[in-house]
Picture 1 (cartoon, one colour):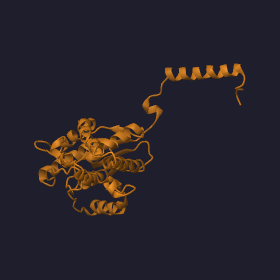
Picture 2 (cartoon, helix red, strand yellow; picture 1 turned 30 degrees about the horizontal axis):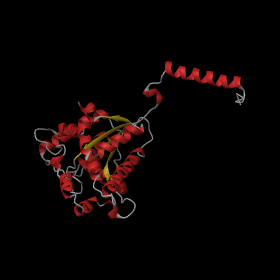
Picture 3 (cartoon, helix red, strand yellow; picture 1 turned 90 degrees about the horizontal axis):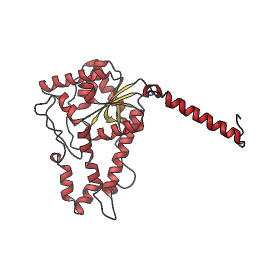
Picture 4 (cartoon, helix red, strand yellow; picture 1 turned 180 degrees about the vertical axis):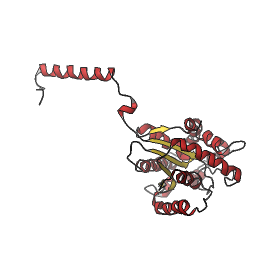
Length: 281
C-alpha cells in the first residue's frame, strides 16, 4: 500500500495528488475522438413503401416503382454512399436472417428483381453497389409479457369512452404530413420526414396513447412501455452487428422507430450519430 490512510499526513498527500490530477485534466482535456472511439450510426426512417396496414398510423405514399421514382431512389442511394456504410441493417425479423441472406444473395448473384419495399429498394440496392456480403435483419416484434388484454388500448378505449381519441390517433392528417410527396424527390422527402422536429411531433402520439386509461387499468401506458422495450431490443440488435469502433452502420427502418432509435444512440453514448440532412445536403 502506498499510503497509510490512518495517518493525517498521508491523507493530505492523497488530497494533494487528487488536486494535481484534476488540474491536469482541466488544463489538458481529451477531445471527444481521443476520449473514446465510437462507430458511426445513420438512421434513415421511412414510411413503408408498400404499407401492409399493420401500423398505428398507416401511411400510403406514391408508387415507388415508376420509372421516375426508381431514378430518384438511385439518386438517394448514390447520396448515401457519402456515408460509406460498412454495415446495413433493415426492418426484417432477426429470426429471418437466413431468408434475408438467401434473398440478398439471389439479388446480388442472379440479378433477381427487387420488391417494392424499402428494405429492398434502399438496403439491398445499396448493399450490392457497395459490395456488401450481408444485410442485417434486426427487428424484434415479439409479444410482451403477461396477458395481451393488458396492452389492448384500442379495445379498452372503445369500450371506455375514448373513441374520439382513438380516431384522432389513427388519422394521419392529425400529425405531420409525411405521406405527401408532391413536387418532392425521394431524397427531398426523406430528408424532410427525418428532420428532428418531424420525428418529435410523430413521437408525441405515444404520450396520447398512454393517457387511454382509468384509475383501475392503464393499457395505453402498458402498450407504450412495450413499444419502448421493443425499440430497446432493436437497438441491442444494432449494437450486436459489430464491435468495430471504425464501423459506419446504416439503419433503414420504419419512421415511427426513428425517434427512439436516435434517442437511444445519442443518450447511450455508444455511437456517433450522423444526421441525414447533414450528410446529403
